[in-house]
Image 1 (spheres, rainbow, N blue to C red):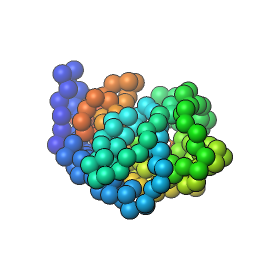
Image 2 (cartoon, rainbow, N blue to C red; image 1 turned 180 degrees about the vertical axis):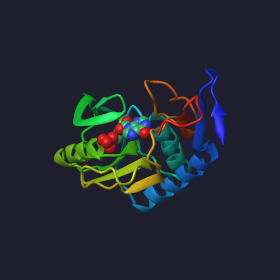
Image 3 (cartoon, protein in one colour; image 1 turned 45 degrees about the vertical axis):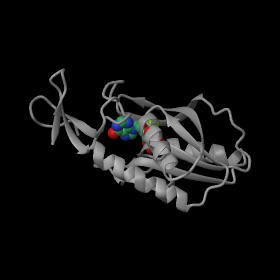
Length: 188
Ligand code: IMP
Ligand code: MG
């Protein structure tokens, strides 16, 4: 299935809104099963903002009441290729010591972003640091981190939508997909 933007660009849909909603409900149940105490959810901005917003509401639906924080990390990237360094653009305000922390990110690719955030929370004295990503791109890992909770396995393509962007566009889309090139081929 595909979606035609007003601009004329076509987006091939990989995970539609309904599928994502169902998966979020299951992830919330998985989080509850971890029996978290003094839970602090940290959304790693920017790409995770819609996923995190939906996931914390799915958590609320089943009786979880996490505190929610934000951390803006930037992995230096030239166009769509990561260069490997991670920078804190905005830090959390909360004291992490003794807390159960769940880091929420959009995509686990090289793993550098999430490994950086996890190491930081461990160094700050978190009791437990769990990681939850909407998408995992297999075969791309440059660190030995694995996410504890994964929404979906993602094909090896540059994806957009549901918070994720290509040059700040497409974040508003309620689904995840990839841009199809005008000549009918796609932007793998
Ligand atoms: P990692 O540090 O290599 O794991 O990079 C993960 C980050 O790169 C994600 O949080 C995204 O912000 C970004 N990223 C990686 N692949 C894509 C993609 O296909 N679309 C949009 N952003 C991506
Ligand atoms: Mg990101």
